[in-house]
Length: 81
Image 1 (cartoon, rainbow, N blue to C red):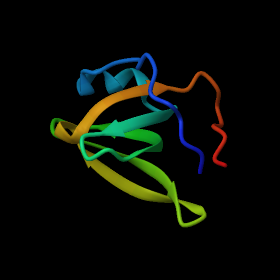
Image 2: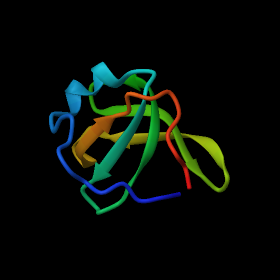
Image 3: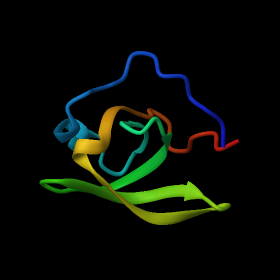
Image 4: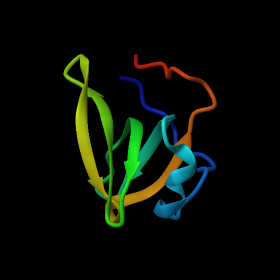
């Protein structure tokens, strides 16, 4: 999977992720990890959806406190390689 350089993120307030529901969203985490994520649920303390790894989309959850910034994709499908 390719790396997307962090430029101007769509938002830095994780609760604003509700605008990214059912969109491919690129996430930057506090631990330095970054990846595409298909967002399906935004809860009070975590988000849920699917992350691409191991050659397939896998269910994945992330604590809101671990998200530094994000960018929603205007396209329905990101480039994964």
